[in-house]
Each structure stands twice: as structure tokens, then as C-alpha cells.
Image (cartoon, rainbow, N blue to C red; front, side, top):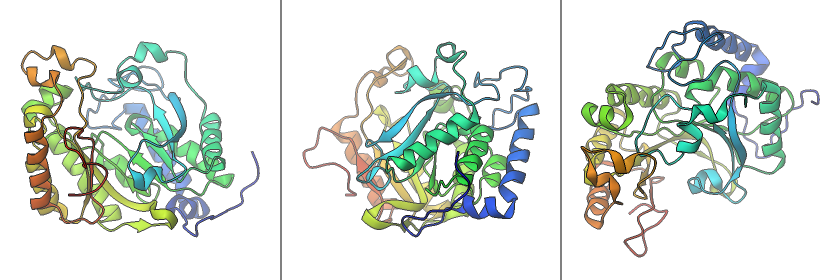
Length: 332
């Protein structure tokens, strides 16, 4: 790799470059890696020594990347005209019945022996920058944060200067997020459920609503409800919360939007997603046969009504429902 040389093509300086220059980034890495010895990187708190055994995420110390490359399918402020530089991390700390990326996240045996070194991961980030991507997008990063941040430091030493997107399922530990303050520029978490029983039934973790809300609150503390937007309308810094509409209102969309508005701010940007389709084990959840179908018109309109009632962000997006002509990537 080349020697450090900062290049700011857009005039935006990501926070991790300042942390690198001060030496703070290396201190954060040391603290994150220490958490692997009795793992509490996510709210499951498996407390296994990841150097010697595997927890519920089935991932050791070394990063496991399923695929990477420019991605045009993210929200427009991330994909822009040249794509989001996406790293799809393998395995997951949740067990969602309807996971659309089950081949990546729910089949750990497929990834045995496929670990990557941090140097390889850093090289991928630099290549994505060279390809013209607008950001570096960590997809499902929660259980691999220490390796990702170490790779980020190496890439930053070699001129990486793109915003970092933390694209997670929302089941994140506060202690980890605090160590990412200033490292991550864009947070894009899910808020999957508002009800603990549903969370247990569909993702195998009853405390998801409380843990995810706490995590989003910490993300909000770090970046607030305003957006730093660069040339061409791409996002440089901010928070975008993904809310997936599920059949039968299993996600509790209105309650989630109400909480965001009242506990944080009505100006928090939301990506309301109605493109649910049955995947993975969705057709085999006996208690919820509605998961075997897509979202219907009434469910989509109810979600839109809740969005209109609780959300005031000019950056909010509505995505995916194919049953209404004219609906797409714009707020109602």
C-alpha cells in the first residue's frame, strides 16, 4: 500500500481521519479488540473468547466478507450516480425468519475457511474508492466491528477519505456504538419490531425492540437529525432509519414511527420499505401465515398514514410497494 496522503475529493473530511491523526483511532481499535476476549459486541453478550470459540454469530476474529462492490440498489442518497461501496459481511447475530440475505447471513457453514485478512479488507475499501463509489457501506457489521475498524485505519493511512455507512439490523451494543462515535459518518439501522413477542417469534430475540431503540438513540446522539449532503445529493453524514412494513402489521410501524418522533425527533429521516416478499423460512412460521404473502394496499396505505402523522423529515423516503402506480423513492 502507498504512504498516507489525504485526498478530499468533495471537501468532506470523514471523522475517522481526524481520529487517525490524533492517535485516538488506534486506541478505539484496542478497546474493540479487547471485547472479543469475552464477547459483548452485541446485546446477546455470548461472552465467549472469539479467539478460540464461536458465539451465536458463528464468527471468529478474522473478517468474513461474502461479497463487495459498487451497489446501485441502496437508497438514492447512498447509491447516488456511482454506487455505494458495499461490503456484505457474512453471518449475523439475528435469526430472522424472513431474511432476504439468508445465503449470506444464515448459513455459517457456507463460510467456513473463507476469512479475509484486514489488509485484504482495507484494499477492498480503497478499490471501491478508486471505482468512484460515494461511500464505504458496511452491511451487517455488528459482529465484525473490531476487524472493520482496524481495516479502516489501514485504508485511511493509504488515502481512504469516503464516508463510512454503518448499515445494521439495529441489534447493536451501546458500548460498541460509543467507540464508533466519530468513526462512522452515516448510520442506517433497522427498527424491525415494536413488540417483544413478535421479535422473539420472527428473529429469535425478545429484547430486540428495547435494544434497537437504545442503539438508535445513541446513533441519534452522535449525528442528530440533520443531514450533511454533498454534491449530487449524496449523503455525507446523518441518520437514516429503515422501517420494513410486514404483512399483518407485524412490525408495528405506527408505534415505531411514534417512538422515533417523540423520543428522538420528528425530523429523523426514515426509509419506509413496503417491498417485503416471502424469503428464507417465512412460509414455515405457523403462527403467522400472513408472512407467506406480500404487503397489500391497505397495509401500505396505513404505513403511509402513520408516516405522515409522525414524521416531518424532508429526507424521508418511501420505497418498494408495487401495487400503487406512482409510488417510489419519494416521501408522500
